[in-house]
Length: 304
Ligand code: CP
Image (cartoon, rainbow, N blue to C red; front, side):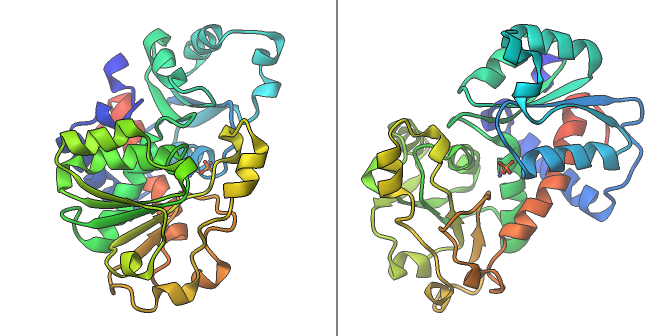
């Protein structure tokens, strides 16, 4: 069962990613099916969430399964000192699958190693967010008609933003070109730039969010500065709103450009972008339902 966990996007081969995207497409056409009858999924959120938890839970509910869990670890026995291992062992007694978000990098991998049931990583610290990546890939494919040869510009917190780390790794199969736009404190970590080098992926780094870069972009992936990862709040204040996308900045962008953001947004996308047909972040979050239905079925070994 353990190999049905999804901890890192690298746990999936190219073929598995493509299969999940096809299944997501099928779920979008028919999201209400009773194929999880009798299955119980636990959602354990040690960090706040709106989209990830609710879309996972909606995915289970629409497929006829049941959900248990907590959205605030303070209401669990962790607050009495119970270890993560013991929590995972207990929940495995009750559920067929665990979806877990945790503030510590590596917590999901550890949980997957001790749990007798599969574990889906719903975000571990600044490390990985593979189910977000599946919905990002689905959104990119739906809007571009291909995953191949796209120019993807990632803007904002590239140091702590786990969604950009997972997406970068997933795109290795489709010859992307990346632009990394971040201030010097929040630049893409060396390990991911090395990953690009090792896989022959072209990338350019800049602190300047220029019109020239926007105008050559297919996917403009904006991110929030992750306040919760900063130990120095003065530093957060200094960097929290350096990059802001306004509607007029899209005036000369490519017709196929779409603006993505894992959300929540703070100030990095102005609300005047929302009505631009190139704004895709709300549909992107909706796509999470279908992508997560596919991921849940994979982990439970259910044909769909
Ligand atoms: N994109 C994302 O992970 O959103 P939530 O934090 O609301 O789950």
